[in-house]
Length: 435
Image (cartoon, rainbow, N blue to C red; front, side, top):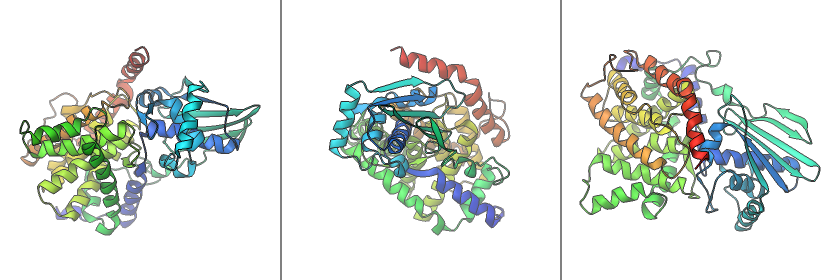
């Protein structure tokens, strides 16, 4: 792969900054936590605790925030997320907005919700990621609107007067497909970066590993959610399942999701605004590196590759869609695992093609305890299909949506998820609301 070692230093720096911006810590599921962030900001603008909160969100935020546990509360959903943001949030901490909430603030938030002081409405908008929080006390009001990115404040208002617009909207600075900012990413360019970047510049990914491993350990130790990861480990110990690579990776990865989706208060390192994507893009690689005794440097480079492939696909698909993010992050993990096992560019592309042929179509029916089941499938396929790729087995372009060019395959997957499944997305939400 020596021909891949040449890369413009400025472009290399742009990719590194993109990677750093899209791999960020969060406490709790990012959609309800973004609601908490909006509520915290609106409360700070109000300069007092509200007596009523109105939350208006896009369809995809509603879908992804309905059924997930809010850290430290033992409760689920948007009302408690908003109340926690108002009574215990700090907007400066972004997706760790609730990190410093006290027991007294948790109880105040619960009381606020029980008093039916939070109204939640669906906003008719073309934006997939949209959160509008209106905090009121008497005649005083404050509004915070988040759009496009989980931490991007699009508009701030006090008593109906706009005081800031596009505040904190930094997403466009890191748009990987904006030619004015940086050349578009491709799998070949991502691999060039992975190989040529100074390892010291990628050291921050070790923090990501440590953070997500801590959540994994929590899920393996305690009975969170569906206990998918913990039960795999227990059945291996009983001799029912084999102690092989896939089961080891599944237990480590799914346990982190089990804990996170059930409201564990430990932070996770996200990828493209999703904790489950961060978990899925990283922990299978950690597991494979450990079992195959790969060097730390090789593992770190594989993590960079996995995250960047995930970022690349999500930049085309969108932050939220009808397609499950575990499929996307699993694709990144498969590419990273292929690299970890010595795969070349052609084999890494083959892993991505194989994943597109296997897992495309897995629906996202909201953030919830059952996400770990989908992550289990993604981890299984990520490893199996990487092994196929290493043996030069690649799905052909005569199969379904697969194109001979991996970039066109990625574009096909993104188009299906962002455009072709719009009605599917609406139906999913209808089924969730009507239960």
